[in-house]
Amino acid sequence: MDRLATELAGLLGEGNVLVSAQDQAPFLTDWLGKYRGAARAVVRPGSTEEVAAVMRLCASHGVPVVPQGGNTSMSGGATPDEAGKAIVLSLTRLNRIRNIDSVGNTITVDAGVVLARVQQATEAAGRFFPLSLGAEGSCTIGGNLAANAGGVAVLRYGTMRELTLGLEVVLADGRVWDGLTALRKDNTGYALRDLFIGSEGTLGIITGAVLKLFARPQARATAFVAVQDTAAALSLLGVVRDRCGDRVTAFEFMTGDCLALILQHIADARLPLAEMPPAAVLVELSDQDDAAALGEKLEAALIGGVEAGLVIDAAVAQDGTQARAFWRIREGVSEALVRAGKAAKHDVSMPVSAMAEFVAAADAAVRTAASGVRPIVFGHLGDGNLHYNLLPGADQDPAVFAVIAPELTRIVHDEIGRRRGSISAEHGIGQLRVAEMPLRKAPIELELMRSLKDLFDPAGLLNPGKLLPGKPLPSSTSN
Image (cartoon, rainbow, N blue to C red):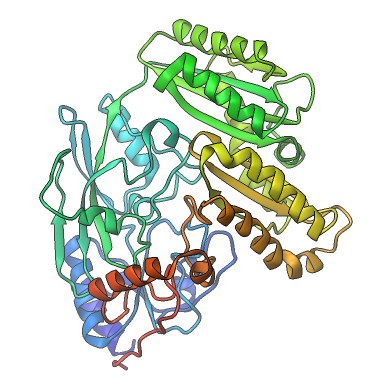
């Protein structure tokens, strides 16, 4: 061990300071296999106090720190660079559920608690935590907060920022901000909590959180609906909202090409319609009503969609098994894309009213730039978030496609910029989009963001090279 590793072992115990290449390997590659880095050590503190001690030590030596939760980042936000100067600080040992308050409808957890465990614990307490992601079996609450995760229920419940009341954060110098309040009203100044949520570990290390809970839905109604295109899907969203109000929990969109890709690569996915549609939406309602009443509301809304010429065909789940089969189609998209090969991926958001125009314009522009390219479009239509992915054509050389992919990304993001949208809706900037920030953010926005970074982390030790461009890694002063 070098000097730093020896001191870290004195704080955490040798078993929680990983220095061998074999032990470090799982922490140095992102889950998509796109980024691979190096680290002086991987440390696994077991408490907020130990995180603070690690940060004090690293600050004294000028050593950068890359926080990591479940290592499920879609943008390389939790992977160190190749320089090997940083330590990776894994938070997975911070895995306590500290408290569940069924009266106040809150749960207080460590940052390293896996999302699925929060869901299970709240269900056992007769409550409901609505964040739902494809990676919920491995992603952690700290990572969800760092990226301001969204998921399929944002339409009704909001992102992690809306689902969070309080935070506990270790700062770059090792001080701890205890903001673990369960207050729903606090008008005493700046909302520090909101600065850390979505900051991707660049301002502080989240070690605990107070999250909002909700009444557990007693009934769900789910339908798989064929529509002509994005415009029809958006119009149907209006019909369903008018008829069902805030019972609309999810409204997920998939193009026909996206559906075909899923059916090609996911063996247990079954299309519940007679024919492959041009596009489809997966609609889910939830409420305290009985299932029959909720189902009637959904069917009435779909009848309204048929009468308006918006619905081509529809299948309404008759039980939980059918509903899960519908969701299996939507959940299979990411897996199908991985099996299909390298895609140019875009996680974009825009005003909901601009979505149909965006899809039409982007499709036309990328096909003009690269004949045969296949847009695979899906996402959370109700909250303005689309995953606009591009695959090479059947006869296109993947190596050639890889060369032109950056230009295709520029085209897609230019279309987003014209509609005052965002190039990252829920995946974060990380390493993937950091070079684009000066192109997509106004200079005053970047100036303000850099000012906050300099205030909270003047030495630039926290997750360097992520989110904000232009500041080099600090030099370590230790051996």
